[in-house]
Image (cartoon, rainbow over all chains, first blue to last red):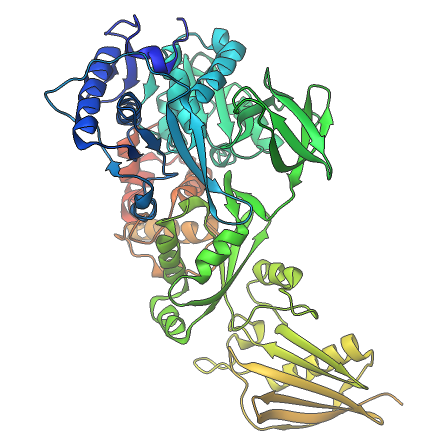
Length: 546
Length: 91
């Protein structure tokens, strides 16, 4: 079948009975698409809508809504997900929220669209942390689809498209909806819930569109018989691990076609990961170059003419393509979703009950370190840590991609600071790595003459609070001595001996306490004192070797 | 304890260990509590991880329609009935 631009699809000669979208109760044909869009245009014109926020989980409905918006001459505003909080947050961006096609008895005749004048707006996280609005024309997306079809169309024939990624994201929109609709390939209106159901729907002439998160989690699946294997599996968002790509070939019979790109640029490169030396190949028409700092610059027919996108991707150019070497800013990929750590930290810190927030990675997993207000700490105790965390995630999921939210949570009395008073990244990652650290959080260090003072905070997760004592955790005296020895060695370069201690314990030291530890060398002794504000918790002296 | 309540307890332990839920003990999960969304609050990534754990632990080799699968994954109780009916006798 010949590729037809979306701008010409409805007035084109495509037969009415051709299937556009598979849907259990109501399959969408070209004919029903024509009628529903014609009704939608009439409805939107009657409402006078100029900017329409489009949000639904049903991809067939979505195509109707998108085409009606464009045929009505309005701008399509695309929320990255359909969470109520996200729709509320973007409410000011549009004059109408559409969650289902508008029906009616009036049908507006449809003519060919001017694709250069049809505007769609997307949102993504910018490097400064603000939500960034990106405007695209339908013409840009159509050029991208034409490139994809030229490269792979012949091998895909009339295969059916199914998947597990949302069309609210540009990758899902392009690969699950626009490309199939333009190429006359039917797509599934609903995403699959899990591999087991997607696999059950494979019948041999399929194209699967999935996320790297899905490809990383295929273990234990039964191999699909060769006659049911899909023709292609497309994925985008983050590089797929070599082992996951190979496992995909073993189980589903094909290597995933990985797409490199972003909301700004659309697809710019691709690879079939044969082995560790496979590089990303530029798509036809895309020109890549490297600017200062090894960062990738992109020119592409999918971009506005003369436009150069300066990415923050560090790359090494290779013949026809490049090797990807990570990001150069505080943007990370979590489950294939772009996350601005700066923005997410600010949003976490703005939550009720949160006083301060920091983020870090433990391997591929995002972790949050929070300082809670006293009221929130009380509710943490009441609801239990896990449910409290998931409550925070639910609140955040209203405005963020749910799967790209932190999975590790630490509730701390303070964030670790380095000697310059800046957040100590290494110490933060250490706190994410451990469930029961053995050292307190260091927030200030004041060196003196043969002396040093440290401000420390004691998180409740500290190893030494476990089971000592049940119901009333206190810091054991022996740990207080060990810390005095440890910090004297680290910051004063002296080796004191625990065995020779003279100590007075005055007040118990408890979880979440903020303390100052003073260490002073006096002749052959190390004097130490733990203070909480102006009160002394414990003090003593340790002998130094002669 | 019946065989079914043993299996339910086992699945609760599996959820905590497979999803690496550091701050939850298996006993805190209700047998009839919704696992996803407003109940326990698991998300789609947790669902994928749980899928792996169930395939590995019980040798589940099943292909199931979308809506049915959702119901089987709704609660620990539903999962236990699903596993009991579909597990491979390999353990």
